[in-house]
Length: 216
Image (tube, one colour):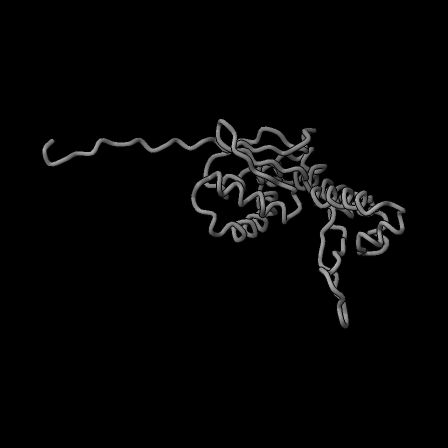
């Protein structure tokens, strides 16, 4: 299916099913999985002229991460080579500065998408998960006994970050600033874990002070 989308540029589920000989249900399962992984995006099909009844079909197109899975690009190798050059000439701090600059645009887009999320870190984490999903990270947030947890099921730079953890560190710093509290990275795809997991500690509840009256 990925190869077909690469060849055609975009296709509907019906077109993919016809070429692959798969049932609509099977096509939907594959496409749902690819959407969750951030490998495809879906848009309503543009129909020129008079449109028939019913909702327009969705057209599916590969994302950049989906194209990279096809092995048609050498971005990872080029990025790794570039960071090795930076580290060799200017040291690891320069790699960290580069990583921080690279995630600055992501931080700005996510912050804009989180407007209206309020001040509660867990609510902000849920809003951030939605923003990161739009960026292709397939993220979700959940409440746990010790606070909250932000999970990213896809990492666009996992292969590069495996050698240069500064990329993960810069991303963690962004998450901390966006949710408005200290966070802790528990697992990363770059280090071989299945999911990037960030822990958001529970916030202490304000103490209830005694109320003084005029008779006190």
